[in-house]
Length: 248
Image 1 (cartoon, rainbow, N blue to C red):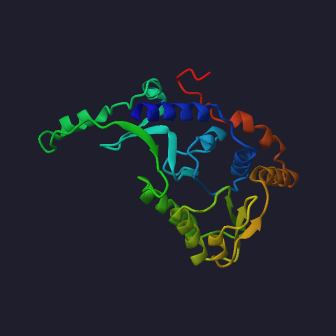
Image 2: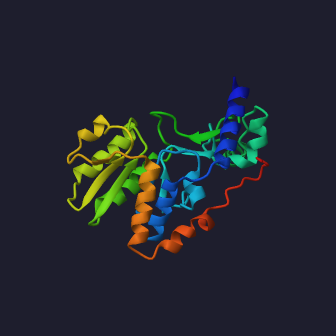
Image 3: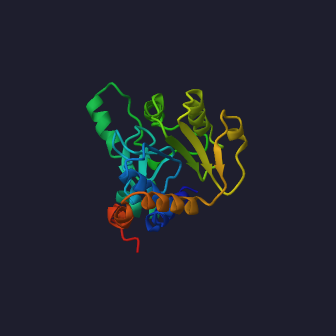
């Protein structure tokens, strides 16, 4: 079972590396260039935000990966994180890599810690209804983002069924601090999720494909500013996310 699981992780990583950002990611980058993007809270694990040029790792990162990243591995014993690309061949061979930090931590601790098995590296992602290891940090950033929302701001919620309890709590915190100068907008081809109908005021529902919505936003921004060249810079601004392994 573990062999198949490891190979599946390697397969997913290889597919994610080959994928390309969508028009919605382009919209986020354009908003960033216009200084109109406060923060992105993403449930995706495929690394497309980072490919598009959004910072996902620093303390003041503009993109928060709520469910972690497929391109990182975490030790199940000491929680040290590693980049998956360095261990791709091992995963592809059907094995979980061993942590190299566990022996070092035991040796520096002397006799304080009892001897334990070296941990294995597993995908640093949070599964459905799981507890995020970065939960405290994410909550702190969200608190900072919602304490004082400037006028004429919107919160765009797109491409999600909103079944994750944590995401619901984030949106509830916005309505508890309701500011008449901002609006929550839900973009999706389906109907408004029941949860959003419970919020006061009820968010604006734009029943549209998220990619078409993004293209419309970009066009409106470009029409009202000198952003034509910025959209053309999108391809150049993308991070070269090619890993060290040969995925061609």
